[in-house]
Structures are given as C-alpha cells and as structure tokens.
Length: 114
Image (cartoon, rainbow, N blue to C red; front, top):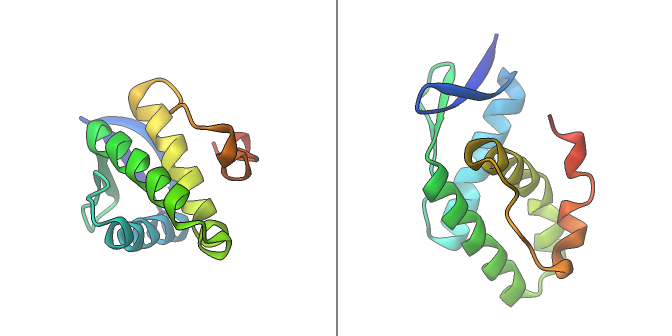
C-alpha cells in the first residue's frame, strides 16, 4: 500500500509507503533547518496533503538558505528531498519554479521523478 499526495482532494502523486515516509521525514528536517513550514502535511494514514502556496514559499526559502550557506555537503544531503518537493510543487501549481543557474546540480535528474 502506498500514500497519496493530494491538493484539495486531487491526487498529484502516488508512491510506495517507504518512499513517502522517507520524503515526509526529510521535509520535516528541512522545515526545522529553514524555520518555515513546507505545506506538506502527513495525515498519519495513507494521505499527504499539500498546500501549494506554502510549498512554493518554502522552496523559495530553501533556495535562499542554500545560496547563503555555501555548504556543498549540505546541498548534497538535501538534493533528493528538494527534487521531490520541486516535482510536487510543479504538480500542485502547474509550472516549474524558476531557479538560478547556480542550482543546476539540484535540478539535474529532476525528470527521473514521476
């Protein structure tokens, strides 16, 4: 059994339980790092609710934080969770978040998430 990621009852992604739990756990850690809610709410059952406005604002804050930190190890560690969040953001909002070229290392391989 997997987990459904939804925006206002509309499914935007359906993934296996472990993949979904890993993402939800990692996004919580990223929230603590940047001190801002992500708009990703794990209900504790088989649904994850996404607030598109909060998710977009969260991602912008994450990229601002990464741009200022300059930590390459941190960037490497959060790459996967950010890629999934970018994918969900696109599914939720309908368009890709525009990012500076300096984040190409994070966007490379994004097309593999579906």
